[in-house]
Image 1 (cartoon, rainbow, N blue to C red):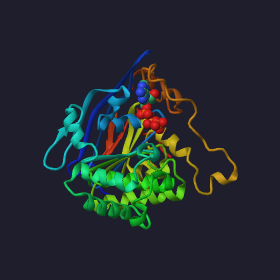
Image 2: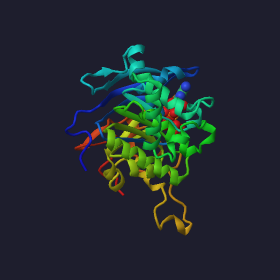
Image 3: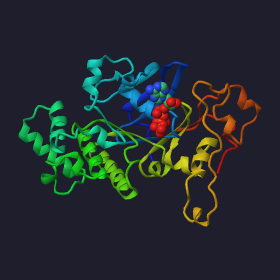
Length: 338
Ligand SMILES: Nc1ncnc2c1ncn2[C@@H]1O[C@H](COP(=O)(O)OP(=O)(O)OP(=O)(O)O)[C@@H](O)[C@H]1O
């Protein structure tokens, strides 16, 4: 499999992104020096336990984080393509407005909260189409039907007049994807888009995103805590822990040869075929992630790590490039293996 970061020019290039929230108890650095690239037509899977900073990373890209009281305190978010490059970390609000839902679209976990209950789904897709393209109502409606067909909604010419409550959760999520794709974005950010759905529907939605990605060549940032989903959709994986990337590698390498003890722990906690059935408990990672207000001075994972030695407690190791396209934040990565 080709390495996403080799060859092609990245569409999105994030460097040293730091996002903070001022709180009563001090400033929380929810994202602390995160860097990654995504090239057109490829999917980066961002994975980690709850609270590791995945959503804050995704919400930082379009600066939606500011609506929740957060602020980008450092780093750059370079968006290329269409013959220009813009740093979203410092772009003006009008520039961001032009990019949101146009070059970059987002799909979230809960489609009911993002769809307006008082408008038909067709009307909502039409609005998305007309917001960015100069087309009349009739043409926008035809596109809405076409988009509903594209995302696999049966009888789209009838469904276009349905209201969100008339659709199942899976169908609503398809509508959200149709809205996200209405403007043919160059980057789709999908934050746990299938978590609330049952596994069959989840697999269909993942197939759909992959198929549409091929058709329109968009880059995808896919956020999930589910490694099974990562295996299905990602080309490259970045594993987050306590606000930082601790391992980055092509998807096959992550599963075949994880090099960070945390990645290994995540993999060990998913049931393997013919393994969980015997009733044996799966080894999960013991302990909890550190509070963002009381980070350990050394490696942030050291308190939970069975490989930890004294040297791990002194300083947080850098994210070290260990092979082309592979980076690990661990002093003992050579000793870690499955
Ligand atoms: N509005 C906020 N104010 C203060 N801290 C926040 C705020 N939003 C998020 N955080 C903190 O940022 C950190 C990262 O949260 P984030 O939601 O990005 O995690 P996540 O990895 O996406 O988890 P999940 O899978 O549960 O969504 C957490 O420690 C969280 O407490």
